[in-house]
Picture 1: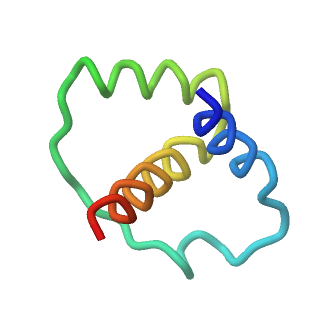
Picture 2: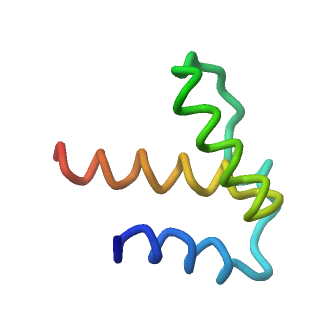
Length: 67
């Protein structure tokens, strides 16, 4: 549960950064409906930019585990 709070904390800590288009690339992928519904519910509560932050954190954490 503590890691989850870290993800939210870093989402709120972002202040003046580069524009997202300068540091990110749009991509498309398929996702299970049940997972997408959960993420959409969270993003409604957390606000704009949450999904991008959430997925980047999730991928980064999984890559660290694999490496």
